[in-house]
Image (cartoon, rainbow, N blue to C red; front, top):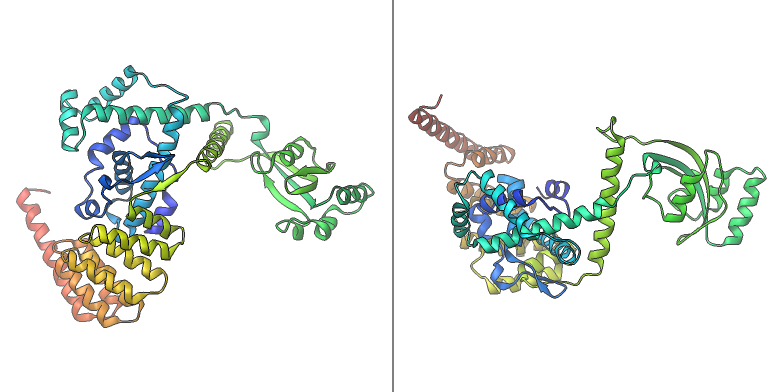
Length: 447
């Protein structure tokens, strides 16, 4: 699951206000175990440049992510999702602070967005919206401010991306060789030898300091605008095929460039409108550069111990993460998910005995969650303790109730472990559930 999440989730996930509002209504309804696993916002979450981030915004980001992942979200994945939600909230907060000094959203625009929400959600009036918000613990004024903030962020992003213009060079890609040296005198000597007819590729293999291309005769393959450092790119895109440059100075040293080919770019799925595709790509690069500079100068302080532990863990600072999780447990000892997180962290450094202990504590706090037994069973499997693993999978089955999907997964697991009595018992459970589903379907009169 973590691999899926890392591939699918982007660093910055900003949606339009209408989509945001819908997620506030329906995304907040995460399952009970997901809700119990979240860090309490009242304890403070994080600060960006000295200002506390909005706990409602963090929860809204969390809801979006949970909704995207769907029912496949596992307790052990929750740490990654919470960490991602925090990162997105921090990013949003940074852009919002910048936006407040550069763009404006007037009340009429906010009112129009609210009316669109009422219409989209098929509510009778703004009063119905207000009542819906109350059930979520929000008042209309607070919600309007959140919508306005979302619109400010959208306008700021639009301003950054809107200044981008596609040039003819953006539609091309160039292939070149280069020789990189540390001193201008060496570059001048090599340039003279090239002009006398010595082979460029052979000289690159012998003298270039670029480890990535020297062995290939200096070949850099095809590259586009925005890929190379400025002086290098400017020279390469101004040259003709076969032409050799003078020495070009960059932060890496001195380059001699030879352009070997130039061609029109291709964009997957955009063969008919490369201008549009090139613009979208360039806008994304410009925005990421702008945001990278904005974030690099920011002071970010994570206050919540659980979220701090997640951050440390995913940065590889495991011992610090363990200490932070222990602090979180001390503050909220009845939260079983903290023990799952701590157990998972112990597992990353091979402390299996401590991990097993933490998983057992989680089960003692919430024995009705079959997913906890499965986590414990998998841990036993990794240590080769098949009998103990089977025992935990059996416990998971006992509390899985009518969850057919879970029983089907347990069926596969028992078959894999060659636990045939348990395998047959799962077959019986699945048959029982299917019989019940059929009866209920007939009772409803479904076809």
